[in-house]
Length: 94
Image (tube, rainbow, N blue to C red; front, side):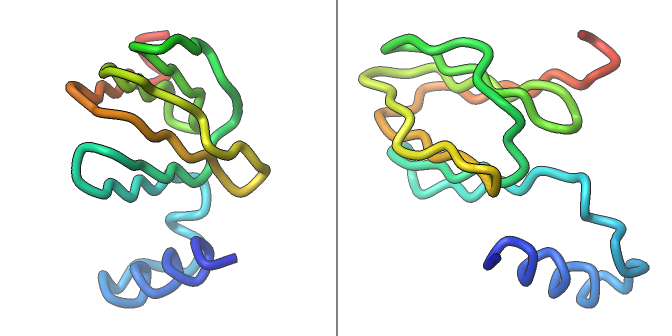
C-alpha cells in the first residue's frame, strides 16, 4: 500500500499522467545491507552470494555475501545481506 502511495506522489511530483508508474518496480536501498523491491514477480536465483528476481521490466540480480530473502509478497520482496553489486537486465535481453 505504501508503495502505491509513493508511486502516486512521484507521478504528481514529475507531472506524469496517473498510472504511468504502475508497472514499474521501485527499489529502496538502505546502504549496502537492505533492499525492498516493489513489483517483484518471482525468484529466479537464490544463493548465499546471488539473488535474482523477476520484475516487470526484466530481472534484478543482487550479488554479495550472506544474502537472504526476508519477505516475498504480492507487493514486493526484501533482500538483506552485504551487497557488492546490483545488476538490472531488461526484458529485451531475456
